[in-house]
Image 1 (cartoon, protein in one colour):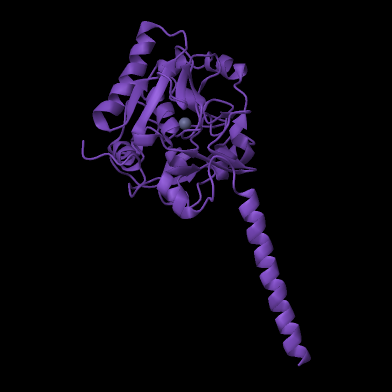
Image 2 (cartoon, rainbow, N blue to C red; image 1 turned 30 degrees about the vertical axis):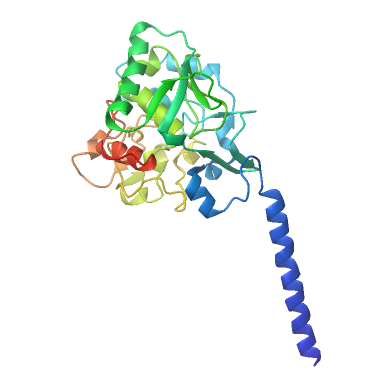
Length: 303
Ligand SMILES: [Zn+2]
């Protein structure tokens, strides 16, 4: 009898505990404007989970990043977006930027409704640089259903700035105004850099940090700059934005093999020899995989 009583007390306590946790979760996980966050809701609304980046993705644009770029020789194989002091080189959500949903480190951005991205260009760019930006837009327009259109009065939009703070942007639609910064000269040497930063804004992250990447590349940790290894942290298996497209060495979102190197030696080694494995870090344009992923995320009909 005593034993039964103990069990039932435990059961009651357990139920009480469960109810308390659920009540707490319901109260604290209901950020605005997103209500009742659940996996189904996230899938339906196309939210993009930024949680794995933690606090490191928040920061301030850094003028020192711009100065560092001015030391980059044109012939170097490194891409300017790999050199920033930001998370993974070029990912930054400025402090104070509102997000679609954030509760502590739990943070989401979102896709752009119907693939329409309103934009403003605020940087002082040369005609040639404006042509590079326009070329990036045209690549999206020709190969996907995504549309960059000059902003009229839309609430959420991208402003392209040209501050001396490097090449950087945020992942997904944050809500309100968000920056893609393309520092003149350095972020325009290759057509793929603008395309890369815009692909972040659309919701994509770096290819070399896919959760299954260890089957395709080896990170040569001994050559990575001290304290920079976190830039090679893998995505969690639950954050799947690969849409069935296999690991893609040729992606415009893949870093070059000497990114974050402290000694000029490679930091990324391809484990498979394919026709694409020597294309790591290319910034000529979209790979077939990039186009497939963009069209899948934005549910484009066949182009
Ligand atoms: Zn990037």
